[in-house]
Length: 354
Image 1 (cartoon, rainbow, N blue to C red):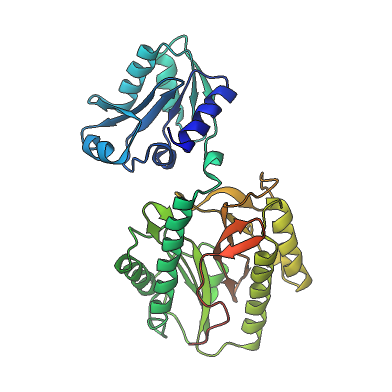
Image 2 (image 1 turned 180 degrees about the vertical axis):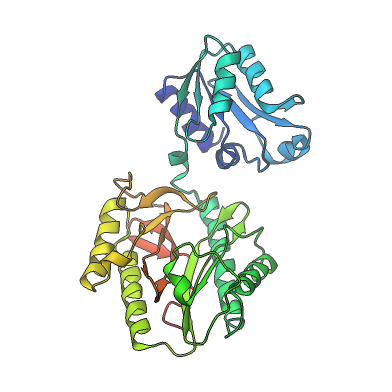
């Protein structure tokens, strides 16, 4: 049994439950290796079952080890009920943060006498192993290369959606399975929108353009943001850009094992406060990256991570968003080490004027 399953079994014992139902697909993938959907894991102290339908049975045989495959033909949750009944388990852990009210209500209706307990599993994915780090590194290299290629596309009168399409095309050509999330391209005044997904807006000369994008390699994501100027940047644009760059580089200096998420976020926020821009930094400094683009741990005011651990992967992404002016964000995907932070995205960060 692999180390991931050992930790999951330990979780079952710690939660004092008889078995665990895993329904969040990234967690299904993490613990079983299976990468389809419409699937659940049913795991007890002495059994490992993967429940799926006929579309995925052959795929599951190829991708999973250790798990007994259970094919369902009349509905996933109907088969889950049957498996719980046959197991004799009376206290089941479920992923309460992702299970719907309707799904839990059905289980309770069909399984009278069975107790259900909400169990959080995402934190078990926070520390990456060597194989995961290698996949994320490749995803980061793909994103870096796509950024270099898209610079030739950035010109006045080009629409934001064209830039996004080219970024995603380059990433696919370079080996990405898909875009890790909806690609953000925000030019000019739209740069003040932190999640300014690409629109029909045409880029104008002299505008800052923020591009936030990521690749997916073997299921693992990368996340990078770069802001460039199409034409010569004004003194004010340079001032704001340099304030963000200073904060981002400072984040790389202080992100290290042993420090908490709130502590790191606060320190970078103070850097922007000293520059006179604190009120324009409206989100947390960063988040975990892995099988999902947003994972634990968080680097923010509300972070629950009291101490980063080596081999966690997080983002470092301060940004400033000023209405009627625009915005700047600079982001790297970062590997946490015992001696600091190792950026995995390496594309140029000094202001590029095209």
